[in-house]
Image 1 (tube, rainbow, N blue to C red):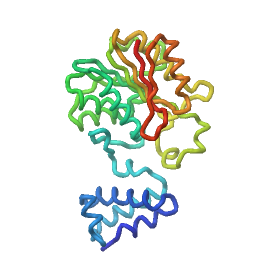
Image 2: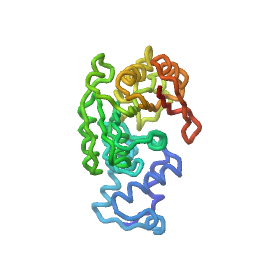
Image 3: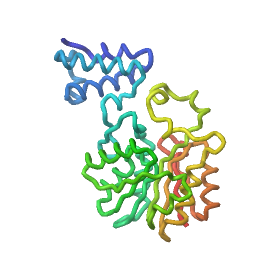
Image 4: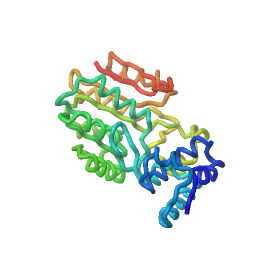
Length: 280
């Protein structure tokens, strides 16, 4: 049977605007047909096999239930690597790619040791390992399910990351960490009161434990990781965080109280303060 892109994207009009719907349908059709985006856009009608038609129908129905397209496809591109994603892990965001780029640009890292705390899908660790082949990468998470995905992503991209299960909030966490040159983290930082502003594809499918923090202590992860950093960073070591845009100055205060004299906030491409770095 033959279909147009519009015949599918029009069905998504109740939950996505036209440009978003077209982009999602294109991603789904590329995945199912293995055609290039250019080829799909050049064809007024796309002929699908019965199995391809069934797959498109299944995909559209899942999207209508707000399931993220990344989970439907099973993968996402992130800073030059392809990552497996499913509901065990958060979907990597563009601002996290910017954090990776900042680490690469700001750190003179040859044979350095890097620790990624709260690694999730392993996106930060895998991307850094791919760009820094002489570095030694460690990454931890409290979720064994997430670590299983992260391990698959290291294998998928042919890089070595030393994963270990750990709770960064544990008072003995730092005992598991050896002296390290760079600590980077995108920890949970979303307040539960922010749920009202979040889309269903996030709330209904992505793991809440990786998203939300206690209302009475929203910066608990930053304080804990900063304390580990003061004990385990080498003399010229650096700490990098992705942060909630609403708490930039509060994170700066935590870092200065922890003994970091040089703290820098950085905006993302949308001019939101989303990153911070620190060193002594």
